[in-house]
Length: 335
Image 1 (tube, rainbow, N blue to C red):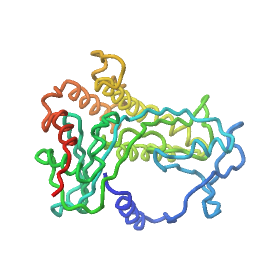
Image 2 (cartoon, rainbow, N blue to C red):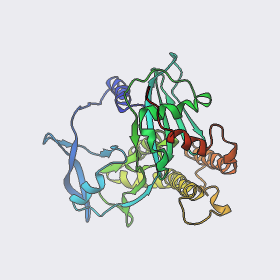
Image 3 (cartoon, helix red, strand yellow):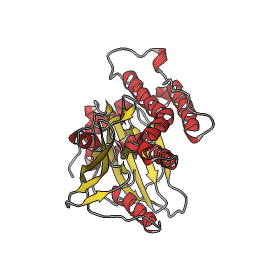
Image 4 (cartoon, rainbow, N blue to C red):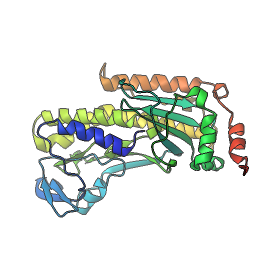
C-alpha cells in the first residue's frame, strides 16, 4: 500500500509525458453542471463546477474519485434517479507502516499477502525504493486494537519477521489505522436507461472491495480499458449504456464473487449467527467470458478461493491467536 503522495508523483510524471492532457492541481469538483436533456427525464451532465467557482465543460465527465465518491449525491442534486447502491462492511481493521526498501531494485512492484492465526499481513513494494507492511485483524478483535500503538505493533510484527520480506527504515512516523471500510457497488443504469447522460464512474467510484486483497488497482485498470472500448464504439450519448453492459458482463460478477466470499469468511470466523455450511466454503463465482483478461481473473479467483477454503487454519505459521493476545496484553516494564 504505497502512500498517496508517492502514487500521485508517479502519475504526474506519466501525465507530463502524455500529449493532450492538462492537469490542474489543488482544485476539487463540488457539483455537476447540467445541459440540455438527451433522454427524457434524465439530466445531461456537461461539466463540473470547481471549488474555485470555475466551470469545466466536457463531452464526458468521468468520476474516478474512489470509494468515497460523491457522485450519487451530486446526481440526486440535479434531479437524476438514484443509482443502485450496495454496501457491505469489510469487517477488518488495518495497521500500516511505510518503509524504505532495504535494497535498491529495478524490478516491478510486488504484492504479497500472508495469513496467520488471527492476523493477515500484506507487504507491498515499488521499484522506487518504497515498501509498506499492513497488519489486518477482524474488526471485533478488540484485544488487538493495541496494534495502533507503535511500540506494540513493532513487537507483534517482529513475531512474523521470519515469514515476511525484509523491511527497511521507517519513512513515515507512527501507525496508519484504517477501520470501518466498506465494500461497495454502484450501478448507474435504472429501468434500462442511464440515470444521467454525459457521465460515468470507474474504478472504486463504481465498485470497491477489501483493499488487503490488492485487487483495487487491477480492477480499476480493467474498468478503464472497458471505458476506452465503450468510448471507441460510437455515439457519445450511448457511452454510459455501453460501459454498463461491458461492466455487468465482466467486472460485476467478479466483484460480487469477492464480496460473497468475504461474507462467508466472516461467518466462518464466527461473526455470523450460525455455523457455516459446506456450500459456504467457497464462492460460486459466475463464469466470465472466454479466454480474456476478465475471464482469466474469474478462473484465478475461483481456484485461489477454493484452495484457501480447503486449507487447515491450524497449519498456518507464526504464533497462535492465544499467544498473540497474550503478547499484546503483557504490560511494558519501565527501565
